Length: 255
Image 1: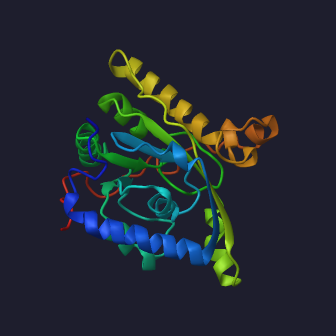
Image 2: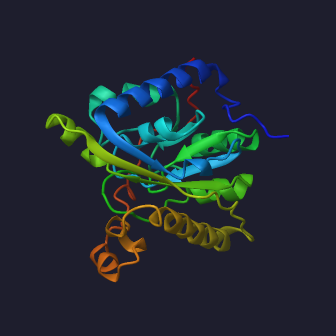
């Protein structure tokens, strides 16, 4: 029997999340020319990890808009690229905060619990929107799929960085969403270094699936165009590699 796609851990947020989904349809309808390809690939139920490229701080909003069900999110506890006026939105929806430079124990443990109960979790494997070309995945998405047996659903997002510049010009940005086919779950064998090597390899596999859903010129080191791959060298450097944000501790969601 299929388990409910509603978050089993944060069920108290269900009415609010449904309302926010409704608002997102109105907002994207008014502010963008949105096209969605592959909507039939959305599974009817979890467990599921939804993954996509991350070129704009408002990318989670497009997941909310296009998905047929509410989902939980893993995201940065701090928003270095988002204006302060929108910081309340992720907290209103409710999400699992990751402090960069820590083990992300709380977020990963909660996400694992959600997935094992049949829930759905959205995660942007690049772990930041500091560039507008595809970059390597951090280990979180591959780790969660291997740990829980959850398949992954790749989504390609194109046009989100143009949304606010277009609004300032009284124009609508063209936003295109392509939903791929689910794949996985990923499986690993061994422990320690061997396990990490496999997780890193799975991370590249995830990004290749996403690269197939966005324009080649934006796929970075995963592009089919060798000139794009060459130009993207250096983009694999993670800017928060030596950063430690806050504390990685239990932070219960607000009701």
